[in-house]
Image 1 (tube, rainbow, N blue to C red):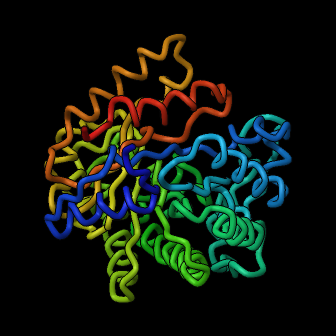
Image 2: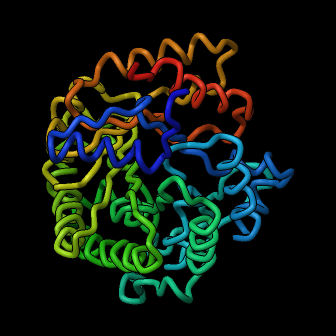
Length: 348
């Protein structure tokens, strides 16, 4: 009978493979799923209830872990937690993600009123921390990792995408000042999560080269990613960075931040990402999320095979979707993913 391995062992092996050139013999590639709002259906809850009540979120996350058994349990709630705590008004539809009703910095004169939120007191952040504590108690054989907004995501949420991009050309000083406050907000949230033993990945969807140029990333985003990574690395804390869409032009920059892992979407060439990350960071990705809506399991199987064929054998790699699983994805098709990790990702 073959040995049963835990998520912690598989994930640890991926990091050892990258940073110490060790090649532990395990059963399969480590794998996990970005699921958040779609977990509501597992407990018969609405997405609105899941986002508004951290106890519902906690229950749904535990149900998701018990059903799917991912090698990392991702705490994917709502990337608008920070901007809501900092002054944005949100609307909560019954069965979809929250929507920004008004941006706090639509009027730039509000900048003087902007404050870094207190993770223990402000908005829904304390509830998220409590949910992480409860998941860590319930999940003992896999790492529990937070997913929170990175500084560019916060800045764009507070100002609005169009206005912030225009500001990079017309008012660069303002953008840098906003990024400093956003970075402090991300840092404060990360420290609160670290205090309860939760690792962190920064989601930076708006840093995609589908939305901004590589030049904007390098001038207005990279320095703050680098600052965060360096700050926590001094404390021997590793953090990860996820960028949606096309990150091909900035793969070397993502690795140069020093992040312990980089996560890329299906719009990014996984082979190029593997070469950029080789020996420097664990690579995570990038099965297209539309596979979770496919009619046939073979569609997802082919996508998983394609990912595994593109990664180099001697680099740390974790199989995952390119981004968050769609809210409407059926649970049965999420089952497919972890089944295929064992079937196609076997080291035997």
